[in-house]
Length: 443
Image 1 (cartoon, rainbow, N blue to C red):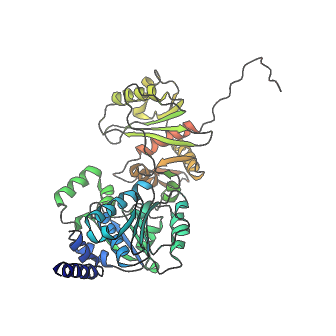
Image 2 (cartoon, rainbow, N blue to C red):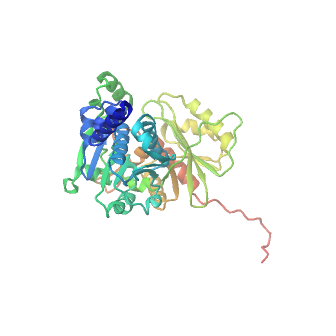
Image 3 (cartoon, rainbow, N blue to C red):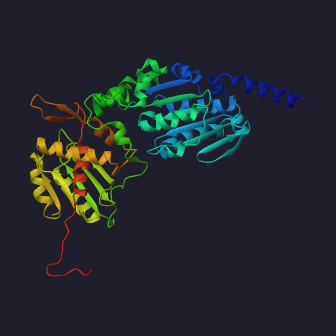
């Protein structure tokens, strides 16, 4: 009898907590949320957008919200959507870990894989990467759609694929992300009142566990502009952006770049290198692309050296990479400090050409890279936010003379972008066709 009474009390407690996600998380997950997290967890608005700095607990509270919604509502479908598989798995792993320690959720779980959970009440949580065009999302009808790192999901996927999944139901959409660029639905949801999104802004200092001393150190380390974006949750100014975020995201895939090579490692393929030299103010950077076909290339290696790295150390590393990749071609910035390194590199890698970067050359290089992106002839890793941010932060302003000036904002860098651009124009340059003299072709 006593056992039955305990079961009834426990069932009553579960039922009570299903009406309040904050009480649910405290009772069954041992998670005590902060006030700013409580408001978000309890919010049932049909459209929610949260712009977050680092370490504010966005993954944790979103995972709790998804589990609670699934248990509190029978026969609902929750989609966890991210730009790539690894990002969607990151949030889904948090959900799985919570289920393992949450007795009601664990008891009601009837089916689970690395990307899908089904409960006995008929509700499902599904993690899906959207890819470039959202093909994996088509055919689903959702009651709750959570866009994790929403600012990195291609605009076309949000507007043309995700919204239709909710049109036949009274569904809820949650966009949650660190800020990136303004030419995107995440920014529009955050700034346009007519779209009727409930708005949350969570800069890192809202987390009482993060000290002001640590934040000040981060600001000195990464620079004020990057700090504003990563910790104050402020968007990059894209007024004069030469490369739109959607243009760049449409050329990304979920894959890992090669790491630094091991001794005696060799890669087979048609590889081209781009080298941008810097030392005290700018970084030296190296990008390697693989030529897949006459028109398509893929970034396979990217390295940014610490400020102050000696030129000779960079040159020696290029020599190591040349032994590993056997470059078919390449370009390096020969302007200014690049003159000396170029003379040394050409002794062991004569196929790497030097380029004097003048204003007309800048326009030509950026124009060719932009055309390559527009044609989707280049593939970039979606997880490398530093590179993607450098590309989208490149500004192009008209001068009174009528010429265009390419710049990047103060306290930011574009070294990785330039290394990529130099490698790209080398790889996509038509290869010469050699014909034997005096040999007649047979037909």
